[in-house]
Length: 153
Image (cartoon, rainbow, N blue to C red):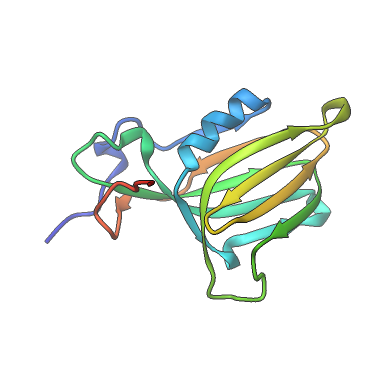
């Protein structure tokens, strides 16, 4: 029988990061690469101007450890003006998406477009008044069901 991974066994502990510029966003992008999430875990809270994803994040920061681990993490984008998707059937409640990277297309006067690039040529474009993205681990780590580190061809 295998035990679940624990924050206490990991180095470092749970993440809580904020991106306020493109350089910060690159760090969050690298840590969320290969995260997976059901489309039902994606929400735009229009009245609060917030877009949020509940991800199953691969723990890249601890990938050299003896076990491949994932953790549930909340990715939020604040000051959202609009959200658009491409290449995604938003009506398919069983759809599971895989996040490849997050980029910023700067606009005028601090505005911009945060783009979440997905496997299979999908994308989520989030127009923001100002860049404020947070990533926060919200559960204990667990062993990745595949038991392997994600790879790319």
